[in-house]
Image (cartoon, rainbow, N blue to C red; front, side):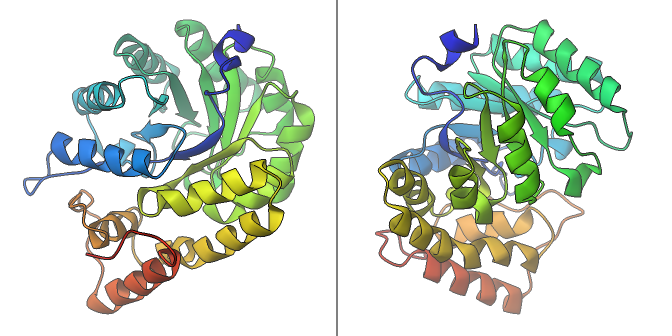
Length: 307
């Protein structure tokens, strides 16, 4: 079954932007701007789009809002590239409901973050993901982000879960390259390890990873894609140079409260995605100025200009 999903080489590889969720002035999802953002990243050569992840403010969205965003992305992409959806939940029941919803509206794969607030054991995590995978015939990516959830997916759990046919990969946002290497080593070549830390895309590829689910690709998709494409054609110097060029933009994400920096960065390039939902607030003038400088560095040799 995993071979069926991976046989075209389109699922779980390359650069997949973790899209911000555009809001209008009333703070409601802006589907028109979402379509504009998808067009922007597709023009940059990305290999998929990822909706309603941590960058997409999944925690701030209702079930109905998530469904509407999934539907808009599926319609806009129209089969050209895979659509990934974040379907994590604190309870297994919630994650199963979201996963089934995503499959029913035509999403190609789901990414399931570890639960929030609670601290499940390794066996409980295994049972959680196994139940989600069994609930719908759709590719499932595990998603570890211990900096946000306080939970790490051990290589032992990942190795066991990788034996389930439709659990096809993991997004690793640990920022720990040793952990990334452990995931690669404990699984087979059909299992995709995707970087979740944008400063480690090149390093993850060197360790046997399959690509990245990257927030910076909202802003400079062609630069992020350049890392992957250069690596795949054997141009390690070019891949490393693109990674170095991207680094100041990723480091600038610490300027404000997550995920507002990403949203203001997308505004700088001319796409009005609005602000994050409160209590997250806007950047100060000085913070915005520093962000704009990081974007200018990332846009060197690019056709996109700051608005």
